[in-house]
Amino acid sequence: MSLNRRHLIQSAGASALLATLGQHAIAQNQPELLRIITGFAAGGTSDTICRRVGTQLAPAYAKTAVVENRTGAGGQIAIQFVKSAAPDGATMLQTPTSMLTIYPHIYKKLAYDPQVDLAPVSLGCVFDFGLAVGPSVPASVKTVPEFLAWAKANPMGANFGSPAAGSTPHFIGALLGKSGGVDLKHAAYRGTQPAMLDLLGGNVSAVSGPIGDLTQHLATGKVRILGVSGSKRSRFAPDVPTYEEQGIKEGTHSEWFAFFLPAKTPADIVTRLNAALRTALAHKDVVDGLAGFGLEAQSSSPTELADLVKRDTAKWAPIVKSVGFTAEG
Image 1 (cartoon, rainbow, N blue to C red):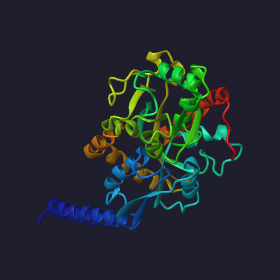
Image 2: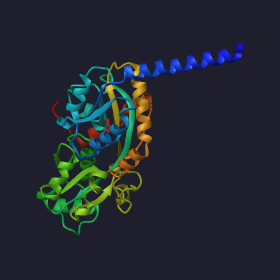
Image 3: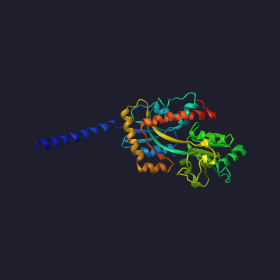
Image 4: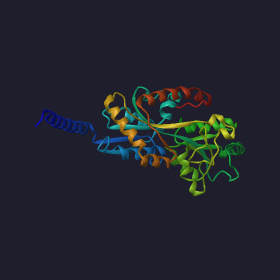
């Protein structure tokens, strides 16, 4: 056997051994179970992205992935749970931006510091909000200004629900009311879907929530979407004008959902999970599945997500002050 051939065979054997050892190392580091924690009820957009992405993370990142809905305190319970979890990559938080960028401005005391207690991993999706009205609002009301005028003339119906107190859709609803000079009473729910059930039952006049949560109910014939919060019309509701088109510039806001691990999670675990999430969020089944709920799949690096949290936290400070809402921490 020639030296070159012997060297080639030995190199190939070494490569195979290294590959085997690498796979063994990955298997050793792979969590048996990944718990994906969301602070909102099953059936809503937050729950949906967890389940869609979770199907792609097992066995790519963990042998098994399960979603846990730890509702309560407007998403705070879930964040506190992940904050206290072991930093071993086996417990991951999925949360909307509000709990991280708005809550620090409305609670005197939070049981967590978004920029200290969590390790950013990746963005998950971006989306717009909408305002839907139900059976208690006359069919003649077709725009947001018309709803505000109706609410002003009918104080008993001047209300709206949102997924949580202090959430982005809560503030958008308050800003809409402020623009029309009407005090819209706010009802906080544990997710958008419970609010939509009350809307269908006539117990609340309107709901400010993620566009995907609203479009799901259009088939009932009892729900109408009057406006959307994006800078341009949503591809999920192309016939619905934006708030800005209706003369309400204060209502232009979008939101994102993102994934986090407990602080002090080793960098190699964050990197490995980020790679798995990027792959999952680019998968056609995930992209198409999220689109069915009005969500645009989008990933990021951990650094990009950390910067986004900082920027949005600064953006919401003057908005919260102008609305004047505070909560007991």
